[in-house]
Amino acid sequence: MMELKVRRIGNSLGVLLPKELLEELKLQEGDSTLVKSVVDGVTLMKRKTARTLGKGERSRDFAYTGSPDDGVVLLFPSTNVKVPAQLFKDALAHFSGREVPGGFDKTDAPADGFGKWVQYASGKTLTPQHGSFVAAILCSEADVECRHQGNAVMLKFPAH
Image 1 (cartoon, one colour):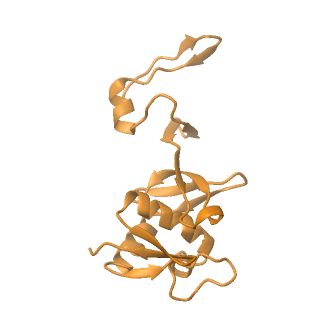
Image 2: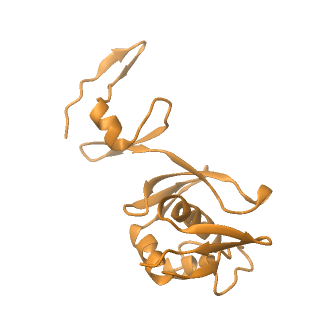
């Protein structure tokens, strides 16, 4: 824990983040952060961006905070969706050493696809579409490989 002083910056008030904290948070000039009020203080989180794994116009950018190790919050314009760390851990264990279809279609997700697994592993609080965001984060941060087979997304999980 470190103490920071609130000071005037132009017409506003703010705090300057020391170099050590910036390095720990992996923040650079221009990065977006989110500040959340919590009991007795605030939490500062780095806003990350990724792209879903679809081809061309089927792919889109999205924002999130957190990591597979700590859990993730998907940041959507209308709501935020929590994805617990345990779901990421369970996915890596369940699919260890296997290649599986993404299966992110909201109305016709294949039973053996990652999207359907996300839906059932989350107790149906997440949908196969949410699985597309989870998969993109796993490919970005957890060494899961992605390839396309026609229009289908295939995910290759590392052996653990």
